[in-house]
Length: 316
Image (cartoon, rainbow, N blue to C red):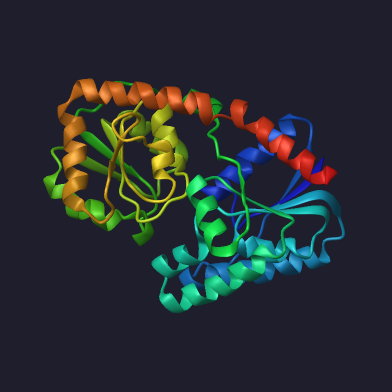
């Protein structure tokens, strides 16, 4: 199969997933082209400028593909103009609600308008979270295809697993409102440990910090299926996360991690301290979470589902 992947960037959350998927497909003998597109590095102009520039690139692109796969709502406008037998859109999280939360309500209204148009351009829409699938089914009537976003465990071979730094608490995410960094900052004085903020480190450096930490804290206000949680699971680092979005699909309370209410710094600190103080609980959670990610969230288990999805799409 011949693919074109479109994403504002091929790193981070859904963009990083797109990059990993392209690599896995290429290893399986398929041809995958990535569309690199620049955008204006200004907060409220990133999506509009990407949409415009990528759409122009698609219009002048004369190549033909079996499948064009867009990896967020702005990418779908470029997807519209690509010559392909089938068109796929992936949405990880609820796009218009995220715009409303991170930017402002007027931008949320624009995001909602864009989203409604984007959903019409795809032959099939996928998401990595059962929560997101449920939300869109209830609000749009569209039945999304659930395809989880796994991690590439081969990339961890260069991460040195050394002894844990006692009472080190890791935050590995962007420094923005949606990720709840301000909630953690309010909780920090109540935490019996040292919080290390990995907000702009290269992936290898962030994973080296995480691998030495006593616990990962994830205080997000909204999430789809957080990659950082899966990475912590693989490194056998216990997780405290907020009960939002797709987090409960990964973090089974008292089994693979601890869940806390969003917007509650005191509860967040209490759960982090519980893991710092209880080595038995810490070991139990880390072993269970490792088993979960190995059995459910690696490319060995998920890639066959993607291949089946694409093949069935082309048959219909």
